[in-house]
Image 1 (tube, rainbow, N blue to C red):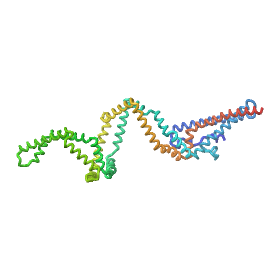
Image 2 (image 1 turned 120 degrees about the vertical axis):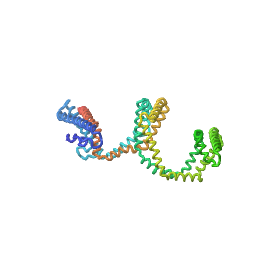
Image 3 (image 1 turned 90 degrees about the horizontal axis):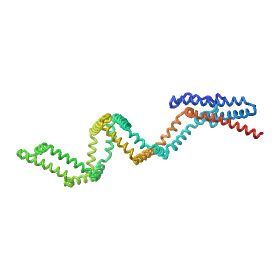
Image 4 (image 1 turned 120 degrees about the horizontal axis):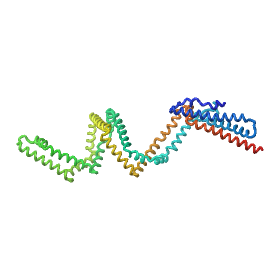
Length: 432
């Protein structure tokens, strides 16, 4: 009987029926066997003492009573511990083998426990506040070696990711994703809105100034080209000398005109251009012929096969330039990123308000993730346990907690003996 009660099941001994570290499982199985032997040894010791002191009085009577109670406590606690994982002695006693029979309910209960006590919003915010994420990041980035490592590994990661994006990927994205979407969207109202906002912020004036500067510089540097073009338009019968004087004068007046527009903010040409842009923005935003013409132009452009090829070419050039710079330890991209990281580290270290703001953002992000995906995350626990075979689940759980549960048997043996001595003493006092 004792052998049957204490014989360890074959599943925990096998180790590794479910996923786990074989070496760690082997250590757990060895610890479980040792504690079972300790609990069994105490039970056998109590049985030997009980038989040796049977029928004796005096002090030995107390010893006999304690040994008897120790056996009762040891067997009762063995039954309780064993009933969690299997039927004691193989007998289908009611309310035994609880884990194999009710593993699904236990899995759902464990999922609910984790969700309510570990993924609750107050708990998440408290833990992140205690972690002082931004302060630790600032302290880590304050070390030059850490900043360099971050930039180096980040550059390699980004370069590797860009390298895996092929021209075919870009072609499919443009041809199957962007172009159909652009074809469905009306471009004219968007252009009208952007133009209106740009004019409201006077952004177009900067563009006009830049164009005028470049145009004037080109006219000054290419006087011969301008005069040749103008000369080609002169009548054939006019003298060459007259043509040269006229084209020279036209070039000079053209330079003066462009300079005058550039240097006069309220020049009539500027005002006329502003009025034209205002009218164009209004026409683009309304159902006018201008808007319809813009949409037709958009369709003609999107229908050109060269659009996809051009997009792929631009992407390929940009990718090769960026990857090359990222892979160069002394490249401008890495140097610029390293400098920006240094500036960020200094600001994080000195700006407590910024750290607090970033910590709040981190907490908000964590709470959002937990609230949105927490149920699915903890659901992995119940879903995994539901996939387990009942006996395998019991064996795996016993392998992890069985050693500590054997202390219940040890405590039951010791406490039972003490209670037996007390009961024997009380019996003698009442009977005497």
